Structures are given as C-alpha cells and as structure tokens.
Amino acid sequence: MKLAIPRERQDGETRVAASPETVKKLVALGLDVTVESGAGALANFSDAAFQEAGAKIASSEAEALKDADIVFKVRSPLDEEIGLFKKGALLAAILNPYGDHARIRKYADAGIDAFAMEFMPRITRAQSMDVLSSQSNLAGYKAVINAAAAFTRAMPMMMTAAGTIAPARTFIMGVGVAGLQAIATAKRLGCIVSATDVRSTTKEQVESLGGTFVMVESEESGDAAGGYAKEMSEDYKRRQAELVAEHIKKQDIVITTALIPGRPAPVLVTEDMVKTMKPGSIIVDLAAERGGNCPLTEAGKTVQKHGVTIIGELNVAGQLSVDSSALYAKNLLNFITPLIDKETKSLNINWEDEIITGTCLTKDGQVVHPSLREGGN
Ligand code: NAD
Image (cartoon, rainbow, N blue to C red; front, side, top):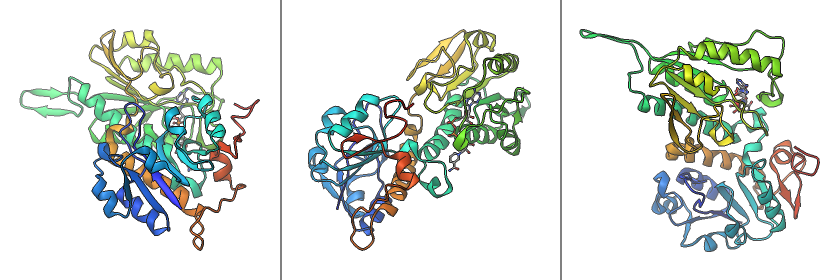
C-alpha cells in the first residue's frame, strides 16, 4: 500500500506531514512511503534523510500522489491538487471543516475519504493523535517569545548597580493548551503572570504554574464537552469585560488564546481597553485565524494601535517548523497505525470507532460528518 507525503502548497505553510523518524515507522508497518522532493525543506528534513529512513522520493506532486492509497498532509489540498488523488484515497490533514465547507464537498466529489485531524475526539486513547494539542502547545510558547522580541523592555526583574528593572506583567486570556504553555514560558522568563478563562477547572492549573487567576464570580459554567468552552451569556460577557478592563490597564503583555469550537473567537480585548494600555505594551492574538480576541488585530500582520503593538501572526506553530512537523507527523503515525492490518499490511478501518466517526468528513462520495451534513453545525 502506498502512502504519499506531498510538499505543502498553501501560502506560509512551513510544516511537513512526516519526519524521517515517522517514515521509518511507517515503512516498518509495511507501507510504501513516497515523499515529494523538497517536502521537508522548510522543516530542515532533507530528501536524503527521508530516503535514508526508507522513503522513495518523487520529483513531482503528481508522481507522489499517483496510485497513493493514503495521503498525509498538513493543510487542505488546493483545487488543482485534488484532481491528482486516486479515487478512494484516504486523506489525513488539518482540513478546517467549519471554515472551508465548499472544499469538503470537493473531496466527496473526487471520491476522497477525508479525515480532519482537528476533529480528533478528546479521549485518552486519542491523546497521542491530538494535533490541536501538539500544535497549540508550541504556539503558546512562541507567542511569549514573539512578545518578548517585540517588547522594548526586559521581561524579568533585574537589580543592578544602575537601578532596578521591574518584571513585565503578562496576562494570558484563555487557559487551554496554548495558554498553559504561555503561562509556563512567561514564568520561566521571569514575568509576573496572571490568567483568565471561563472554565473554572483552569484556576487550579494556573495557580499550580505560579500564575494568579482572574475570573468573574458566577454560577454560570463555561465548560462544554471535551474540555472545550461554550459561548457565555450576555450578562457574563459584560461582567467579564468590566473585570478585564480593570486588569488590563496594568499589564505590559497580553496573550489571547480563547477559542470556541465552530464559532468565531470571542472578543475579549476591546478598542477601549487597548486605549487604556501603557504605550509600548504588546498584545499577541493567537486567535487571529478565527477572527481574533481583539477587534484591532489584523490577521497575518503586526500593527500599532493607540501605542500598543498587536501581533496577529498566523500559523505560529509553523514558526517552529522542525518541532511542529515532528510532533504533527507523530500524531498522524499514531492515527494510522491502528488502521493498518498487521497481516495483510492494508487498511482495515472500523467505521464505528469514535476516532473514525469523529474525524471522517467524507466517505464513498458523501459528506458523512454529522456536524457538516445539512442541519448540522
Ligand atoms: P481551545 O483552543 O478550544 O480554547 C482555548 C481556551 O480559551 C480554552 O481554555 C477555553 O476555555 C478558553 N475560552 C473560550 N472562551 C473564552 C472566554 N470568553 N474567555 C476566556 N477564555 C475563554 O482549548 P484547548 O487548548 O483545545 O483546550 C481545552 C481543554 O481541553 C483544556 O483543558 C485541555 O487540557 C483539554 N484537552 C484534553 C485532551 C484530552 O483529554 N485528550 C486533549 C487536549 C486538550
């Protein structure tokens, strides 16, 4: 059975869906692995390293995808790439199903069985396949590093003969995987760290990392299924905004990471709040891809507004292309391994398994995911 790893073609994508380490393991599973030449170039994985791990190198994408039964990608294939897939091929990638509805239909029409890795259910068995976790963790770290690079002051307290430098006050909004890593990174850099979330379970996590928890006192719970958050009531949002407005004035760096599955990112930092921040403060908006937690954020750009630098870079995990590729590749390896029959070395999928029903978008020419079918989300 042939497994192909093409070079990514979406603008700004630096990652690749396999590493030499995972190729070795895929080959050991009995798969014929083909990597398109240059696929790993931006993640420092050379063709030679893939070849040494047991892959064939294809000189074009058409050659890589020809007759491939399984295709690993980071992002959705472009329209012109879809035509290169074999009918019945299994595609595993980050497919942005809520944002890219039309393309999902195209997979069905092309007879591609497409699996969206970001829909991986949050169950223990699937933890090692969870691409949102592996990528958000790196993004949370890099967000703080990017803030430090743009900040015109030092992060830690420094007591010198020439005077004392105050530590930077860093506020993390949204304490999921990215937020927790941002807290840990900001602490390691010597910041005074505070954080907020709508899920009350995060209080203990923030405090265990040495941060102060800032939260609206309310009976309302922000917990939805799978560890995700739900949209809060108007009353809660108003009270949260008041609390944040007071707190944000005193902050030097704000890292926002708040997301609600299937919905635009909630607005947490309004323009009025930005106006109250000290000149030279930094906002890193990790929710930029989903509309941003600050309305002044411009996706893919760094802008100055009211004396504040607002960083809305996209694909922040991709800035650490070696680590993000290696972890993403591992997620895909862990996803495919149980689907390969050890005897026949071919795909043997249990279509009832919740990992499959949770991630499978299209099958046999139909859009099958419940949240994408008519009447779904
Ligand atoms: P996410 O990326 O969906 O959202 C980021 C954070 O923003 C969440 O903590 C969310 O509660 C918060 N948020 C949403 N709306 C907000 C608002 N209005 N104000 C403040 N904060 C808001 O979350 P995530 O990183 O995917 O993690 C969610 C949870 O799932 C975490 O507790 C994580 O540990 C857990 N998790 C579990 C598994 C597993 O069991 N396999 C895997 C990964 C993550």
